[in-house]
Amino acid sequence: MSGLTFRICFLLITTVFAFNCQLALAADPPDIPTLIKQLDDPEDKKRESAADKLAYFMDPRITQAAKIRLLKEKDFHARLALHYALASQGDRKALQPLIDSLHQTGHHGSNYLRRATGKDFGWDIKQWQKWFDTTSDEKFEQFIQHRWEQKPIIEKWNEFQGLYTRRYIGEDNGVEVLKALGLPEQLSDAEKQKLETLPNAKAWNLFEMALAQKLQQEGKRKEAARLLQKVATEYPDTYYALRSKELAAILNRMVVEDQQFKPVENFKQLSIPEQIKYHIYQIRNIEAYQIMSPGYPDIFDTPHGDREKEYNPAVELIKIGEPAVPAVLGLLEDDRLIRATHWWRRGYPDIWPVRYSTVAFSILIEIRSNNLYDQRLIRSYSRDMDLKTKQKIIEQFIDSGKTVEIPPTEK
Image 1: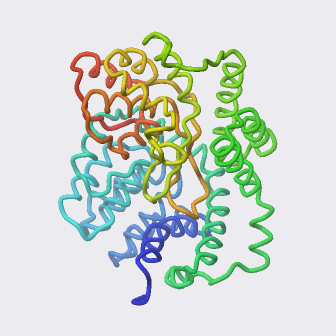
Image 2: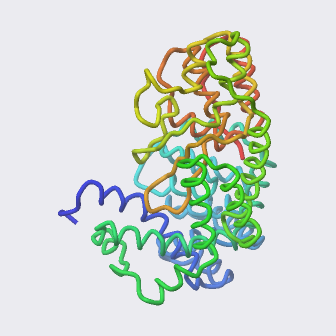
Image 3: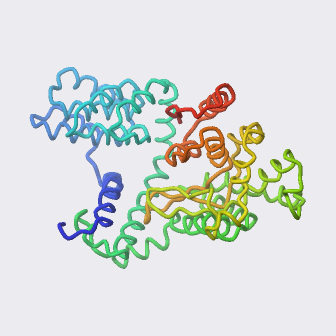
């Protein structure tokens, strides 16, 4: 391990959790009664392991057994695992002890919170507490129910993701990473064949081509929509199907708008209200690329890097300033897509399109605060925020004219 480069070390850290999840889901675990029985094992580690494994199931017996065991459990780590098992059944109150555990380190509290909630605030106890306080029991139960309904789809995707990432790491000279994970250095012939034939693999190829090539690079919304619709109809049980259906509908709507749009030779000859309207339409043509991981595409940049000469509608709206604010505020719930995508890590088979709402939020921060925008907050605004939270941000912008702190989000 001492010879690993920084890049490979980083790959190891960011992929080990995904592989552990994949292996846990793919393994043949003991049945629920056996795991429940192990909650009373004399060894602390075995009790902790049993509680952790129970979190991969949804069953009323788990709730009852975990609550009974908590009455007499003294081991700190086993107690955390029991609270995690309860949270996985939809018990929101079981999250509070996990949050409280973040006052100290050397345990799995942060991992349990991430796995139980789908959120990732690391060890930031204040952020976790804010999210917990603004998430109702009902909202959390709905999230858990949806997660379990999606479990078969996620399990199939985990199988694909594991093979896909292993292939990427191996091809990217990450053999040491695979060794550290206890995985073969190369895919077997059977694994290679499976990777080519899995429905999620075929769906991913179309999904990535639609967003990264047809939309982002070529700006062909109609063709991107066609490929996404193909994912939704031909691979309906895959991880990418529901999003593909939504994105195809949005792009088809934008194609109609494109057909109705009347271009102008020189927007500077328009009145300010007309310029604002023109720039808002042109937001869809912002082309931006993510370079670093983690990172985010710079929507204020231009494809060739010449900000002084190349047209960027977001920059033009910032130049207009306050007169543009009311119209831009109206875009904070706009789901239309621009020619940009962002991703988590290289070798991770998923990407997300950047929407009008993200661009609008970035523009408002630039106009009102004159500070560099926070990429993490913008990414969160685009992907995770519920309508109620977005509306609160809009109201705060209107009332105060100042940059606001983004509240924790609900799903």
